[in-house]
Image 1 (cartoon, rainbow, N blue to C red):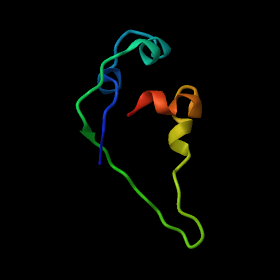
Image 2: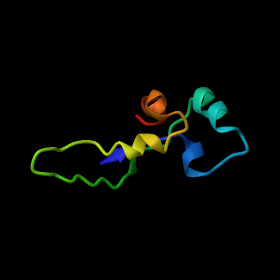
Image 3: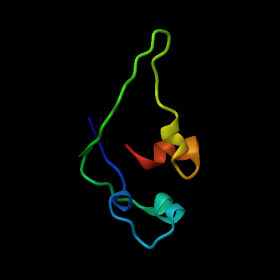
Length: 66
């Protein structure tokens, strides 16, 4: 699996997070990511702690990756 992210995720800049998050128009080439899926007897789903690591949570989840 591969995902494109903002270059600021790869190498930090001095710009504040919200500044580059809403103003950046560049994306990296698709990069490999590690994905872990854990299937339980009754549930299978997305690890919600991923979204908790984002600055504004779920509201910005779609803005950060594509």
